[in-house]
Amino acid sequence: MKKIFFCLVLIVFVFKISAADNTSDNTTDTASSKINDTLQYGIESEIVDLLKDIGQSPNEYIYQKLFERYNDALLLDTKIALTDFFSNSKNLPQFVSDRLFSDASSDLLDRRLETSLLNFLGKTGGIKEGNFLLSKLDSSDNIIKNITADAIGKMKVPELGQLLLQRLDDADKIEEKFLGPDIKAKLIIFFGENKSLEAVPYLKKIITDKTSDKYLVMFGMVSLLKIGDVSSIDIISENLKNEDPKIQEYAAYAISSFKNKEALLPLKKMLLHNNESVRYYACKGIVLNEDYDSISNLFYKFKQDPSKKVQEEALSSLILFDEKGIERIKDFMKGKKYNYTHIGIISAAVAKKPTVYCVAYLIGIYQSTDKSGKDIIARNVVSAKDNKIDPIIKELLGSEDYLIRIGALKAVYQIENSTLWETVEAISKNDPINAVKLNAKRFLDLRNNLLKSSK
Image (cartoon, rainbow, N blue to C red; front, side, top):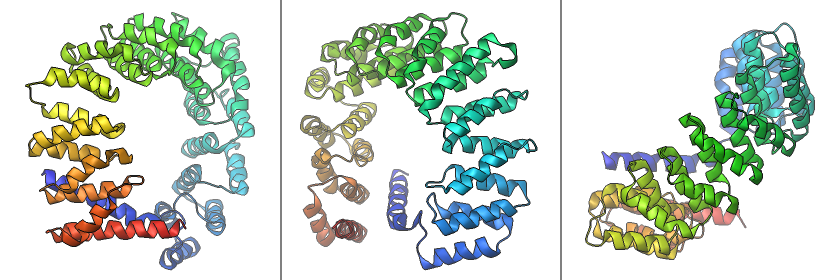
C-alpha cells in the first residue's frame, strides 16, 4: 500500500510538470481552437464546462467573448458561473468590472446571482465598490447583509478602513444602522487584511469588553495580530483567562504569531496553561521568537506533558532550535529507540528548516532505523526545497527501494541549486531498474529545458 501511495504521488508530480506549460494561456493550436469554437458556437452549458479549461489569465479576445456570452446568457446558472470565473481571474478588463458593478446595483436581482456579484465586488473592487458594499449593509435582508460583510472582509482597499469604522460606530448608536455580532465579526476581518492602524482602538475595545460576542473577540485578536500592533499583546493575553476555550485558543494563536520580545513572557506563561492548545501555540511562538532560554521548558514538555499534541510540538520545536535543542533530545534518547512518531516529527522539522547539524542528525536516524522508518523519512524530506537537505537526499538516492530512489530524484529536481545532479546523471546510466533510469533522464531533460529557457 505504501508503494502504491508513493507511485501515485510521483505520477501526480510528473503530470503537473508536463502540463505546466499549457495551463493558463492555452496557446496550443488544439486548445485555442476548441476554446474559440465553443465560445462562438457552444450552448450555455458548454460555456460553463469550458471555464475550467481556460485558466485565470485568458487573453483579451477570450475575455471579450466571455463578456459577450455573459451579456447574452438566458440561464441564471450561466451568469453565476461566469461571474464566479471573473471573480478569480487576473488582469480583468475594466469593461467587465464596470458591467458587473452595474448589474450588482440593480434592484431586480435573483439572490444567487446577487451573492456572486457581491463576492465579485469584494474580490476585485476598489473604493467605489467598497462604498457600494457599505451601503448594502443597510439592507433589510439579513442574508444579503451577511453576504456583503463577507465581501467587505475580502477587500484589499486600505482607504475604506475609516469609512468602515464609521459604519460600525453608527451600528452601535443608530437603530436603523444596527448590525448583528455575526455581521460585525465578518467585517472586522477587513482591518487585519488591510493593516488598518486606525482600527486598533476599536479592536482593543472589542476584545476587552466582557459583553462582546465570542467571535468578535476571536476575530478582533487575529486582526490586531495581522495589523502588527505589539501594544495589544498584553491585552490579548488577558483573554487566556477567559472561560471559553476557543477564545483562549485564539488568544494563544495571536500571541504565538507575534515576532517580538514583548511576547516572550506571555509565551512562557502559556506553557503552564491548562488548555493543551494554548501550550501547543506557546511552543510555536517560542521557536518563532528564537527564545533559547526556553529550551529547558520545551524539553520538559517533550518528556512529560500530559498532552501528546504538546509533546509532539515540543519535539518539533527542539529540532528547530538546531544543535542546542537536538543535543537535549540525543541525551534523552541514549539507549532508547526512536519510534515512528518521533521519526515523523523529526524528519518533518528537518525538512522545514534544514541545517548541516540537523541533517547529519537525521542521517544517523535514517541509517539506524528499519524500512518503515526510512519510508517515513523519505516521504517527509522529498518536499524540501533548500539544498542543505542534499546529504539526506543522497542517502535516499542510494536506497534499496527503487520507489524511494524515484522519489529522491523528484526531490533533486525541486530543490533550489541542488548539488546532486552528477549523482542523477550516474543513476540515469547505471541504475538496475529501468523505471528509475527513465525518471532520472526525464528530470535531467526537464532541468536542461529550464536552464535553456532562463538564458
